[in-house]
Length: 304
Picture (tube, rainbow, N blue to C red):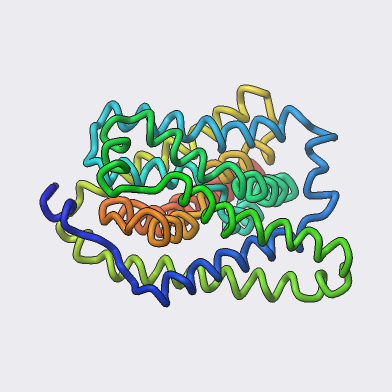
């Protein structure tokens, strides 16, 4: 990998675009809150072992495995930051669609996506700083880019947690309006976030060329480990097949759009980190869809 190119590259979309992305992310969190129902937390009561296994695998297990992977392969600091950044993000909404196609436990998938987004609104900024601080190269990189820790925490919490709390209040007092606008707002913010990933990937194309195939040998194994973690965690508690598939997908599909927004608005657009987030955003959909197709094929064979 060309270290000089990575050191000199910064992803910048302009102040107005970055403000727009922060608004999109806030709208997405607001939509998540509008969609929260008692059923979103039903697994907490009915199947706590299954529920907490998924949450712990996402919030603790994936960052821990990512940290171990960084120590083993010793990637460029900005690439390691991207890996940790993605690992600290909650599950992506796309996981629910893939879970449906894979004949997984869709209710569990939806529950984990919604509740992990709630937890992430408060945990993600602290998690990024904590796990990055445990790996010396990323700790040094954060010092180098002169990140204001207090400012980072406050701004990220405002972008993530404030709209979530406002959405919950809105749903409580204006439930009819909340039900009416939740789906359109979720779709619009989701499409906007997808556009962010695509725009960032186009902007990052030069760095993809510089890094060449090396980046794929980092992102793809990282994503495979995430899927494997979800599957092994589910097997450890003897989850049924549908729930095992749901946990596999939930841990393997991360909200890379959130990672890109945090990177651009809070972490100075470090090129290697952006390249990891952009490539992950494309690859995890390929990997998740491939798993779903494999499971459908396996189901078809078992019925004959």
